[in-house]
Length: 137
Image (cartoon, rainbow, N blue to C red; front, top):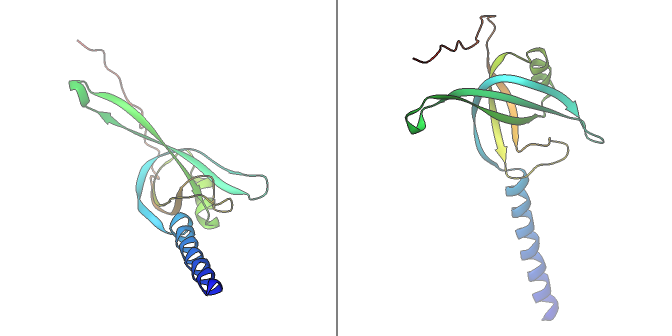
């Protein structure tokens, strides 16, 4: 009787551990699209070489009745070699990236929970996107 109970407990523990590992590392919790300028994109790592990047997202903040310009950083990893090669060629350009968010990181997948799986859009024009500041009156 004791061996049967021990076997049941061991089975329940194994199933629970399997569910936990799946949700933590394989289940896509959310996905979306971010747009901005690629600040840097590089390959790094000691044992597992992964592609890591940072995007700068600019926008306007109109809270507190004062308009201001703000920028946010979006750090991401890329595991697909074709996507990584394309991003290497377009560093500094404005891009729109589709990403998936995982609750946990794996060393061979990257350092970020945000994994970019495709490029939605690349701004090919070389227009001057600088912001002109005018003196306030």
